Amino acid sequence: MIAADVEGHPPPAVFDADEVGHCAVLAEEVSGDLEAQAADAARNCPEGAITLTG
Image (cartoon, rainbow, N blue to C red):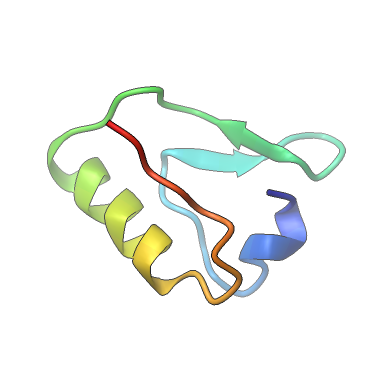
């Protein structure tokens, strides 16, 4: 995933773009509100660039 994949779709505190625009995972494991935000981001990503496992 690159930054353009989430352009216009603010990512949750679980991931962000690194200095060259590639996805950087900020939290390997999430729960509670962050888990819900990550699930919403994956479900709503029009490019299908976000995948959750676990």
